[in-house]
Length: 190
View 1 (cartoon, rainbow, N blue to C red):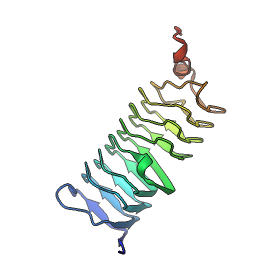
View 2 (cartoon, rainbow, N blue to C red):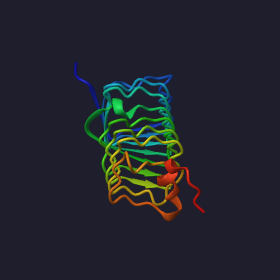
View 3 (cartoon, rainbow, N blue to C red):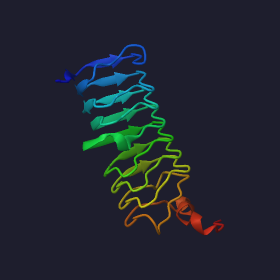
């Protein structure tokens, strides 16, 4: 069964919990102010698409292809990105709420997270090398056996990263954020 192919289309203010989006491949499309909360996006393909001010909280991403997809000002609470199709997987996040999302074991090198809330996000065993965390709140984010080599955390905050169980060679941190690397030692830094 062939999937529908949609190119260069703007979807504005559509509530997909009320009207369904046809399963298919979407290329160079813009989704603006759309509601996908709890929507089943499994097996959809999105290439070079932008999601602006959309709510995708708790959407099903099983085998969803996200290829060069930007999420701007979106609510992405509880998304399981590790369930996505990993072929050509590439995403970017700006001004997003990614609280409780999971990137478990994903290879997402050079990913940009900018001005985003990443509370309790699961990055365990992910490859985030060369990624940028620009002004992100990483409170209670999980970093275990995570590759963070050459990643930039200089403007981010509230992270707790154990250097003994994560790869952090050449990663960048600010002096203000150094406490997040020493938290496991239960010491006071003034």
